Length: 59
Image 1 (cartoon, rainbow, N blue to C red):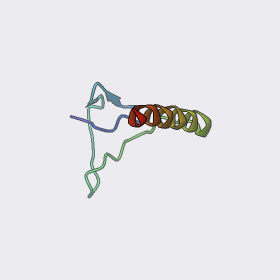
Image 2 (tube, one colour; image 1 turned 120 degrees about the horizontal axis):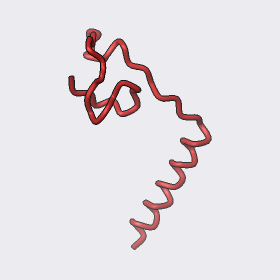
Image 3 (cartoon, rainbow, N blue to C red; image 1 turned 180 degrees about the horizontal axis):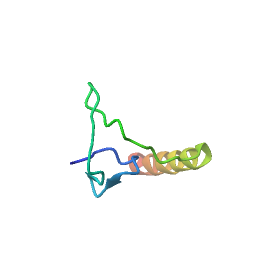
């Protein structure tokens, strides 16, 4: 099954690796397990990306 949730541990190359997948009424996978990203890492990556955007758009 195609999976677009890149933060799910079961997502491999845009496909779900589970044999059985159940979806809720909104179409979300009920087996989804999210990769835990700590706040410090997330904030650092956001700052790096925003810095890149500043350089890109100031040109």
